[in-house]
Length: 185
Ligand code: 5GP
Image (cartoon, rainbow, N blue to C red; front, side, top):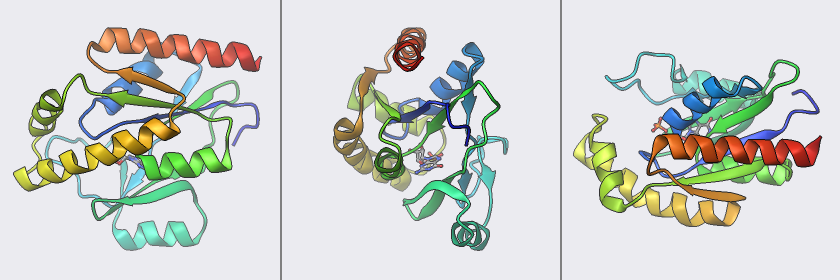
């Protein structure tokens, strides 16, 4: 981990659009390096294989035992984790994770900036979750945990943004990154 990199952590309920926001933000800001997580979750039909390093549970557990993760958590029966980051020099780190992992980062690295993304409404969140091909049971499970992600997320967050319009969200995030960098440099 490069010592002078800032760490930005994007959290929020599943379906809020964190993945899209994280990818776009990294494209727009060349000084930002997006970490690629590991997961033991099976790949969705809508996924291409680049979203995560997809591994089986035994492989994931071996990496935990070898202390290869910066943070990791179990979410809905699957393991998710951030490998210890090695960003290129001069870049800051962006993580897109759930709240248990964000809490680990904050306690280990209090200077990390946590940004909570929220949906404009519960109805919008539900339709986004249905749109990505998860089963009904899975959608219900995700809606239940959305409440936890939101409540715990509010306690952890340095900034809270409503992801209503993607462009506005990206502009707001670029502003937050700039503020943090200015106060650091
Ligand atoms: P999904 O299965 O929808 O891709 O992700 C489920 C949740 O796991 C999302 O909230 C996502 O942000 C989170 N997640 C993805 N990667 C990581 C990670 O490396 N660590 C942690 N703690 N959560 C992650």
